[in-house]
Figure 1 (tube, rainbow over the protein chains, first blue to last red):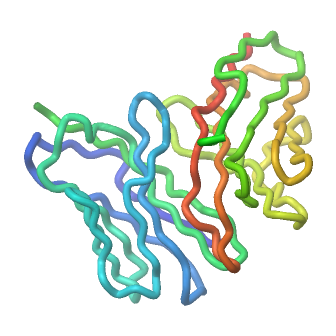
Figure 2 (figure 1 turned 120 degrees about the vertical axis):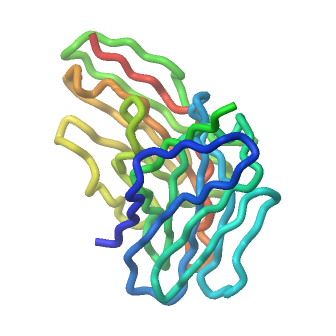
Figure 3 (figure 1 turned 90 degrees about the vertical axis):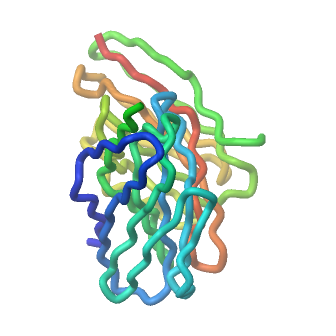
Length: 113
Length: 116
């Protein structure tokens, strides 16, 4: 089975500081997509950032950036200058050729004022 | 529509009754997913539809659960003889498939099912 693993169930960070959420995955494919989704208490899932595996450059979206290590099958999310609105559950996900989107179990992030 | 639409947003049903949950995906999205999420927990995959291919039903927890997708668009998830452990939020998502790759999924707001 193609799995996605988020080993940390929860994390906490002080407002304005930086936090990194880890994710590893299993795949036999060379080309695939990786995603980080955010689910705030409103429960609406929102795409935070995506990475295409054939691109070596790490994706960035404002305060959000990834550290994509293809050989290690690692895809961590770094949130800089954390804000109270970043408090949410974060899910890592992977999709590949002819394969469904597979999610990790998620991590609950709390930003402390 | 502009986004993925799910109905109803909330459903309370008596144990033993059947329920139908509806998902209207984004127009043109050929891939459609159903997930279940218990309070504060992760996403449990239920079923995946892609175009005209046979659906991937590997996540359905029992034969009381079934889903169909008519005309490659609207999908209905049916739970027969509901049990209290079926209480959860049911999320639907759709995505484009570009070539052979699924792109990012867009989610509906979910249906919160409560079995009493």
